Image (cartoon, rainbow, N blue to C red; front, side, top):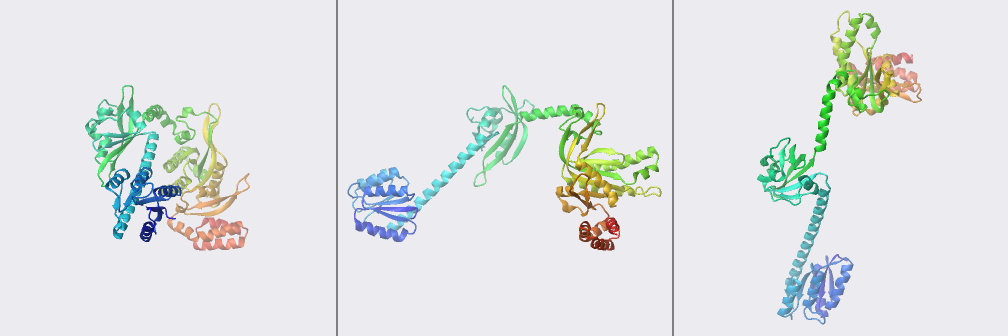
Length: 554
């Protein structure tokens, strides 16, 4: 059954049947055609259809009928169902009856009997079209009212002030928070040139009214979208610093019709900023001096502002990347120098390496002679970037050392990522910062393994898994090592991103063969691994890791 219907009312069965057939032929596909032989029956049918969820769009009624007359019926229908369009179809209605139907039933059209078929169908078609348009408009208006209700409810619940101004600057809406900040009981009738004076808006930290023409809301009414924090609202009992954002609102033609402002009290934030500035001034000089002994990042990790707040035994668990770097054969190098030259050499080397660590967000936990231990709290990429940069810096540094009595420096770097304990150790008179845990131990072990595999940079599979952009590095798997006290082996990867271009490309070209050889080696298929390592060296004779494994296979 259709959701819309047309109801016909006439006490003459033949007329009713003829009218039903005519309307069924023209409108039956989209509308149910219902018929009643009296006003009483028509009201019953209307009630039944309403209960079934079927809307009657048009009622066509005769005037002279037993019981309820046509004009009376249409008047009753109008009282109960005002949206239904009413048509009177009769040849015997007097002027009074028609007038009553027009006045009390909002009669849509009067058609005389016998009817003209074209006129009848056109009238009903127009009536149905009007009904549908009215219903669509009602739905749109209902949705609009619901949207407005929800928007108002949302704005009233917001913890920031919201106000709307028309093109004259008049305040047309303010939510509850805005009224609180502006101390409004009613919306004042203030124009643009009086806004600053009306709402007591001043320039920040002055006693000067904010120029009305420069107010953010006024500038938004001229087309700008703004955000500023140079405004204060002055009340007799307090001054409220304000953060405000304003934007223009345009109508369907694109013209600015209103502007909206969102603002909030930033007193707490201002106070916090002032206190932070005070503490910063007090601690700046001390921290500047002591930060060279205790990294700022270490203080931050322990939630301390000053080194004076640190206590023995404080610690915190964090996931970090640990980098160990060591100069190869440093003992041999130092034996050829005086103690003074040794210090000069170490400091010259460390001074060059330090910026790479700092610029990548890391900090140096300690220097152990020529060894560097650095920590990175951000992603593991920063630690690997640091190591690559250190190796490139070293290559440039070695160019300045190309003298007969100065051999190039070689270093080994190991990086591991995982949970560790960061804290302080020591006694009553001397404390130090340190990092403790398996993560640290494995990083140190990887640095030592760089000597075994004759390669400058190794990372663990833990670090590889934490890289956000692993594909940007030239790397390959080179080993599986057993860590003391652990049952699971650790995957070791060589990062050769810093190697000379030709050597890097050679390793990339032989990477599939090399990693297949590594897999065969750790599967115990030594002969197959040996053959693959030999292939690597045929293509890249300077692959020292492949040389090392080939010796193991032999």
